[in-house]
Image (cartoon, rainbow, N blue to C red; front, side, top):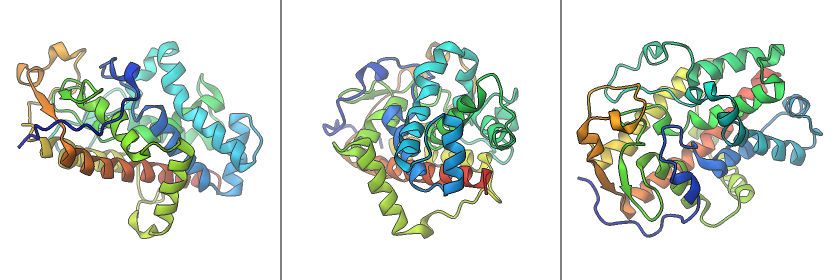
Length: 300
């Protein structure tokens, strides 16, 4: 049953971003992407850190690399979206609720989605085979996409453009996607800085390293997308009792959504936000650790 009591704990930050309400809402917001990048920086091998520093054009000291990775993590949103519109679909893969996710190719017919781009940059960066964005740009995109793919609503749709067409009653967020992008990240931060939050999440993970068994030696970006798709179902949609709508993976705007989706309004109460914040906390941590493992695997 949908929770009706409004949560008053949600953050006041990110107003400008939340008012956009578009399918290409900034995933995780700037803070979330920087948290992921800083967790990864804390876990790079010296060799990987040197290569990352070289590509980003900074010195190879840990602090310098962490700061550069944090800047790189937000560049695809703060700059590239306006200067390279073709990159906008690369940030997500619309896997329909209830769909067979064993083969994700039908949801990425042109190859221009997040799973394909992660694998492309994963293969090409260590060979220094860069596209028009160069080494710095390609690495920035890889860092960013590793954050994006861990946002559950970037790997799922319910004929609602990844939750962007679901109106949410919150202090700031206008839609379900924005709530997960920004408000819940602010809940994780609890008033702390990006740097301190990343350090705390990393410390918590290190105390229980058995939590994540994913390995790039046997896993793929498709596996990460399937994981996030499952979380979208179990942690985003199901707790709100949102019914499944017929699959519509590609829509230009929410005006194209089924009327039932356009009419849907949900209120996220404390019970929902508390559980969702734990999920976001885990996904930010996993994204950072898996990004570190990926970069370390590029330069063993």
